[in-house]
Image (cartoon, rainbow over all chains, first blue to last red; front, top):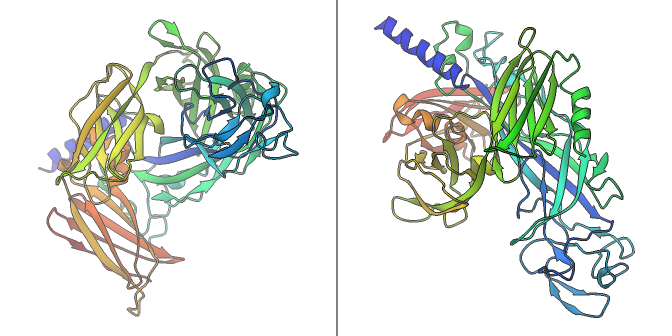
Length: 259
Length: 293
């Protein structure tokens, strides 16, 4: 029976390795933004189309996911009483989102106007919400089996402890005013410098950790003037050691029999 | 435009000791798709570098020798991944990613009594595919609403998939094979019916006094027959076999929805630790008391 057992284990190990399912540390990594501001000319939700000028909900494409109606780049208008420059007043932004004045370059909606702009002398817009989530990754990276290096019975090396941090080379948000029928309007792309999450993992898990917040480094589509501003950060929601077929448990060296 | 970012990435991140160049293209069928490739390198740090494509979907990534996981993505499509090993003699690999258009899948999770399971999480798994790096919008995992209604926003059209549902107190259950033909699939019904077993116990000081507020971690070594290979490949399996609870004021804790097999339960407060393990079987509650030392 023993050789059969060993063959079974060997097959499981080989299969798991071939399938990319050998031992891993599984992370949930999110992209965040905060301190959102809109200050430049935006021409997305304007009169003369099917749009309901001037407020619109925005989404963001990023390395963390696609643009969507999902609180990715919240604005400030939310069931607000609004009067435009022609004296038309109504309660606007009633569809549940936190919207932006998305038509800032036509006379009817231009600054200064304190019900169309909520800050900086009624000429700039600031989000009234805090941190928004751009999207999330579920990622797994190969890890060694946890083991006990000092003989106290507890794992202290290997596993998720193989990783000191998560580094993102650069990031961006390409912002769109979202339209349910057709078609989303590009506002601008905002780029951010590299960010780094230092991890303090045990072999079995990593507690939540985040990078520093960074400001925009440059813009694109168009490259100027800046129309929006925000800070970006990355967060590791968790890390957990995964051994789907308990392969580490088959190691005969006692140092791997740790809790 | 975005190509500027590729240059920044290529010089500053992956490529301090460039030894190989990976080129390729993203298409949807024969049509080029503008998107980006996320390069993930693991060298003790998890290094993530987004590299945008040009308008023709073409990309270039310079990396040092080793393995790199490439994830191709574009708005409106479901991402694909490929692991590439490069080094002396491997030349310059060319990778062609063909992305499937995305559609949404929605439905409701019920329990065996016909009640919606609020907060249940539904995950997507494709037949015969193992992924290491997925976007949440594609993987699923968002909690269902209070009535059990769920939506997965980005599921690949034309590729057979299964849905795995899990929730606190139940073992993971999976759908039959489904296939999304079009932009939307509604009305999928998922049933949670396997309760698994429970593990309970108390956290106490060496002198016997209860310890409230301790974080108790459960790790399950599930028996082979508890989950299929497809279920084990899912992030739902990771959640189902790794659970956390906080001990109550009297030191008690409980985990529900634990699979049969073996469990290891640990806790620590500062440098004081405790651990215990037990076999688990459906219908038999296991008790593990933890004494901090």
